[in-house]
Structures are given as structure tokens and as C-alpha cells.
Length: 367
Image 1 (cartoon, rainbow, N blue to C red):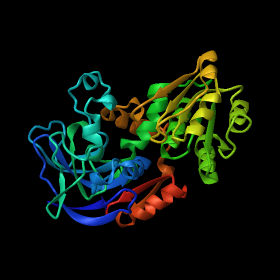
Image 2 (cartoon, rainbow, N blue to C red; image 1 turned 180 degrees about the vertical axis):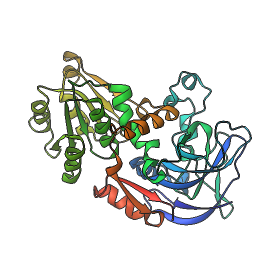
Image 3 (spheres, rainbow, N blue to C red; image 1 turned 30 degrees about the horizontal axis):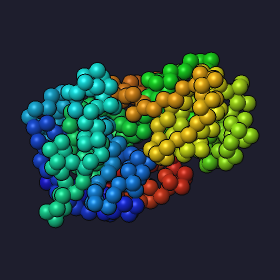
């Protein structure tokens, strides 16, 4: 069948909206008409780091839409269902059986390599394969093929253009707080990078009643939003080091933060985040950025500090997406104001605005 895709022809190249051919769903696949897709920094960072020989490709991994067809082996999903799409997992390996789907043994193939497990692609153009199946979906398209593991059925009362980012960015930031760090009312949380993931972390922490919230960013508008929505103290991150940012964070958190979420992937920011922790504090790092991060080993050892990495905030989409939607309905996960909608035809503008800090969470809506 025909689908319109936002084609990435090469690393760092702008998206190009073109028509392509999408396979009919196999027995274990689901055909989804995409209504909207969040635009996440991971779409850009992966696009720009992959080698040229892995292109052309179609990205997008925060899709939301309506089920059009269901493969014969798929259960629990029906034509007409409204769905949020998330990362894929095999459902059969040891980690998946333990419920740790973010650490699936087939993660790389299912989410990053641009093909099915058998090496075939779901999308072709002019008879040539196009790398797709990004996070098991490639939702920068009018139609996408998914699998049951990464397709979450939601109530039809939800506005799909508002909940698309729950499939990755929002569940990652919120999961880092709710599943990994689990701060309490008397604790403090510092978020480094007040983009969509960082804001989701603040939203989740506010819902838990965490007493002290701090947002660190370079964009004044984002700091103002964090203050208005979550009561976070905004700190400009343009004075790094122990005499600048670290000292300010320690001042705001009575000697050091109990918890921190680092979303920038910048090595210097990560080091400051560890130094600004209090005794036995924990920093959770989420970003794809510098391949090597540094910290003061003596400081870490003497103060019993912890560094945690996490995939998708330890989230299982089948339970985490509904959980976050329930929290949002109860007023304990306030993220609606972070969204800015763009027509699919303006996806490059959405990307520019996101990278400049003009918007926090762009969502492209299919024309």
C-alpha cells in the first residue's frame, strides 16, 4: 500500500516528504494509520550518528493512531482501536519474561537497525528498500507497521495528538522518577536539561509531592515554564563547575541533591550533576550524547553516591502508558502545556524550533 513518509536521505539531511510503499502486515504485525507523532531528540541524534550506508531511512518513534489491519497471530488488538506506539521488544527472551522489556536481548535489531528480525524492510521506494521499523514503528509516516509488544491500546476518549509523546519521551522522564529514583516528599530532584524528558521528570516528581525541584537549562523560556507548571527553581546552566553551577545547586538543596536526572548527554554537565549530589545521592542519566562521561571518583566513593543508567525509565509501555494517562487525568502528571502541534508538512520547522529551544515538545499531525 502507499504511504507518505518523512524520508531521511542521508545523515543530517532535512526530512523530505515523499510517497513510498508499505508492506501488508504479516501475521505478527499491526497496520496503524498514524494520526500524530512526537518529534524526539533521539530521532535527530540517531539520524546524525548513523553511517551514510544505512540510509535512506524513516524515523519517528512516538506515534499514535488508529488500527487499520491486524495480523492473524496478533491478539488483544482490534481494527478501530486507538493506540499509542512505543519501543519494540521480542517478548520471549529472559529480560522480557522478567518484565524488563527495555533490556530485551533483541533491542538493537528491533529498534535501531531499520529492518525486521529477518533482515527485510517494511518500506520500499522505487523498488529499493528504505530503512524503517525505527523503535518498531517509523511513525514519521501516514501509515506504519508495528507489533503487539509496542502497540498500546488506549481509550478512544483520549486526543491522540496530545498523547503521542507518552510512548517514549514522557514515559522515559517520568519512569526515571517513578520507577528508578522514587524520591519522597522530603527529597530534592534536580533535572539537567528542561526539554520534554526533563519536564516529564519534574511533572512526575511534583505528582509525588517532592519538596524541592530544580531545573537547569540554557533557555530562559524553559526555566520559566518549569517554574510555572511545577514550582521548580530555574538555574541557568551557563556557569559550570564547582564555583558556579555546583555551588548553586548545593545552596538550593541544603548541601546537595538527593536525586538528579541528567538528560543532556553533555560530559561537563554530567560531571557537575554528580558533584552537586548530596551524601548517598543518585543521578540517573538518560541521554544519548558523549560516549564517555567523567566524574570525580573520590567524591563518588567518599560520599556513597550512585550513578544509574536506564532505558526508557525502566518502563513497560503496556503498563506505563496507561499509568501515566491515569496520573494525568488525576492532575498528577501535567504535560499538556509542553506540546506544540505542527502539520506533517512542516516537520522540518518543528525540528528547527525544537533544537533552538523555541518549543519543548513538537508533535507533527498528519495532514
